[in-house]
Structure formats: C-alpha cells, structure tokens
Image (tube, rainbow, N blue to C red; front, side):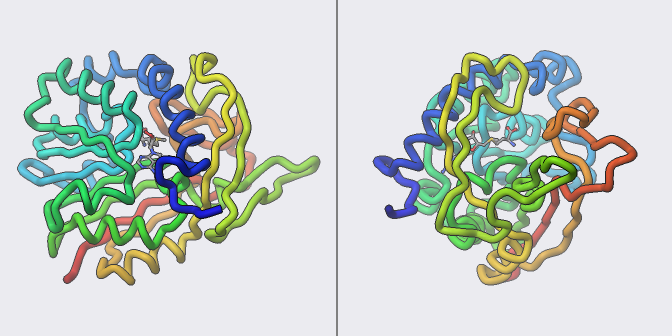
Length: 277
Ligand SMILES: C[S@@+](CC[C@H](N)C(=O)[O-])C[C@H]1O[C@@H](n2cnc3c(N)ncnc32)[C@H](O)[C@@H]1O
C-alpha cells in the first residue's frame, strides 16, 4: 500500500476519524483546561516564550494546530498566526475559540494536510513555524515535513519544535522492566494502535479507533532539517512530557514527570532551527 497519507488512503482516513472524534472531548477536557487558561489571560507556555522571545508582529504558522489553543496563545502574545490542521472539527473549534478570545483577526485557521501546505500557503511567508507535542508521529516521512517547514520559512525564519521523544514513543512496560515496542527509526510500516479514548481525561466518547503512526529518530529529524537548509540552534532532551504517559507519572498543566526513584527517561525533546538560505 502507498504511504502517501492522502484522502482515500486507509491510514489517512483512519487517523482523521480518530481526530474528528477526539477534538470535542479534548476541547472539554480538564487536561487542556481552557476556561482556567483563558482566566489566566490565555498566555503561551512561559518556557517556550523564554526560548522564542518577543513574537509581537511575527508571522507564525502552527502546523497540526489541533483546536488552536497554542496558536491562540501566540496570537495573544502579538503574533499573526495561521493554524493548519487536517481535521474539520479541529478547525471549527479553533475558529470558535478565536472568536471567544476576540482574536479572529490575528489568527486564521486553514483546513489541510501538512504535506499540502505548499499548495495552501505561499513560500517564505513565515517568521516562525511552531510544532508541538504529538504532531510528527502522524506523518510518514520526516523529510517531507522538513521540506514543508523550509517552504514556509523566510531566510532567517525560525522553527520551534517540541515533540514526543522517539524513545518515549516506543517505550513500554515489560514484565520486569522496560522494552521498546516498534522501530526507533522511520519505517515504511506504521505502528498500529487500537485503543479506546485518548491521552486526555473525559475521552470516553472518542470510542475505540485504530490509528497509524510513524516514529522518526532524533538524527532523522535533525538531518532532514539540515538537508532542507535549516541550521539547528537549540536541541534538548527532556525527562518529562505533557501527559501521564505511565500511570505513576505525576504533574499538572502539561508537565508530567516520572517518580524520583525511576531512571530518568527521554520523554520529549525540543529543537529550534533557523533557515539560513
Ligand atoms: C496531538 S495533536 C497536536 C496537539 C497540540 N500539541 C496540542 O496540544 O494542541 C495532533 C494534531 O495533528 C493533526 N493531524 C494529524 N495528522 C495530520 C495531517 N496529516 N495533516 C494535518 N494535521 C494532522 C490532528 O488533527 C491533531 O489535531
């Protein structure tokens, strides 16, 4: 079977059905804490803001924007934002949230597959491309993703990526320790997951879905960016992630850590890069 994740492709359709079901549950979830976040002034995450600095006036494209929480945080911080996602439910919710926040003129949401972005948005139109946790695993080819980032960025424009660590993505429980389930490296064969609900609370309505995802090793991500003319300026691996990947993990507000007596594990990573040419 072709791995082009376009409409009509079994993987694309299955993943889209999952996200269409997940969006309403996520929007209502305590995990995304929309009402509290709005009451706090709808800010971006402080650690991301510290890395990115002042975004006022920057043209920012948020790839795989989900229902727009992060996109709107950056719009609220002064960026001119375009969020792109392939889920009509996500785009609809993002537009509603923009309206509620009075940010409809600073944030526009476009329906589309990530790989179709070069047909949807002009080249060299972004100062900043923002991608956050749980995005790359839905894309079969990291090289093609990097070409989309390079298409969007102006010379001097920056990428911010905070992603699930490729080790974390395949880390699983073994009877007396840990095991890796699936390929660390990008593989033509997707990882197949048939499970109920999603990573947030209140996701019973999501039902049971089979989804298809692809791992991308750290060197594959970084090499793809370099191949497409981006220079890496920041790279960090984190022993924490945004959700309770294992039931023993504790945390809040999208920062969850493993128990102190566990060996620290690589659960997420951050890359920043600048388009040099
Ligand atoms: C885990 S969410 C991203 C979450 C984001 N960090 C957040 O918390 O809001 C992944 C998003 O990727 C989108 N997505 C998955 N495959 C896609 C594709 N091929 N093209 C565009 N969007 C896609 C889904 O619709 C979903 O909104």
